[in-house]
Length: 355
Ligand SMILES: [Zn+2]
Image 1 (cartoon, protein in one colour):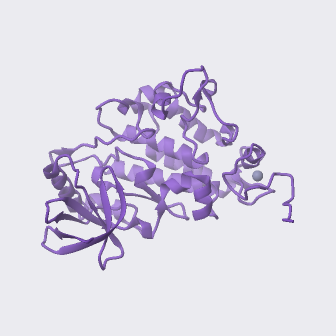
Image 2 (cartoon, rainbow, N blue to C red):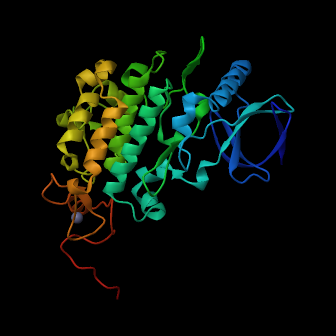
Image 3 (spheres, rainbow, N blue to C red):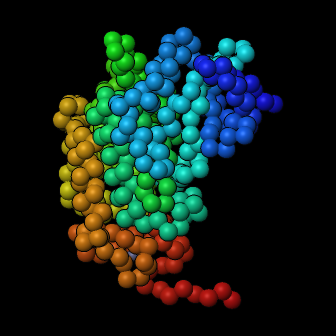
């Protein structure tokens, strides 16, 4: 079933297939325009405000404020290009189809899916991806945008380690004297001050979630607050662990993790210090004390330099920091899990040919 929509100028855009949906709306392909998709938001809480928000974003996409953000190919942001309205009054917008240049970020956090989609990727690519995400966030912050609902679902990445962001309609920003807040929250991707609270996010809330995502990228998808409480209390949620400071990096005695988790000491000192500043007591209680996205970008770019990385003698996909004398990915395989490289080959053993 096709849906007819019209942009502000009166031009008709026909939407056909559904390519994705979430709580915030439904995304469709656009007839005869393979590079574009359209999002409709039939459940927008305040349709009039949502329309103003979209019109403001479309206008800003043509103003100096977004020049640096939208520069480069492929585009890093699925910025709203035109507002749309259906005959039934449902509002939405046109944007670039991120699927043409990127994979869903989520696939990078699931070792099996990542090996399928990006078999050439290594820990070095993960560092570059994390740096690219930090730069994207720093650039958004410097223009006054807060992502607010930063999470894997909204992110994209490619084989070169470039990242992109969609769901631009949920950004928090001001336009003149009008403020457009972000009230979306996602479990596991909310800074402590936003958990069970109506406090609006700010740059430092994004910086907390950036650290979570960087940890996941560098640790085979492992969330920094993953784990069963070590004191015997029941596990409720990642957010509950965040609130109670149950984090292996900052308080190793607080959680029990499966043996298959990558070793905490695979992180170089510089990054471990940054994580400690975010996930430790002060970083959780005092948002202003967290390292900002630009600090993360610098640290990650430093660690991604060739002189800072080494390759394991047993598997060329086992890339790790020079600070660790032996391969953390071989260690992980000894425990029965594989984040990078060939599966099913135990270190120290040659591959057995099939009978
Ligand atoms: Zn190895």
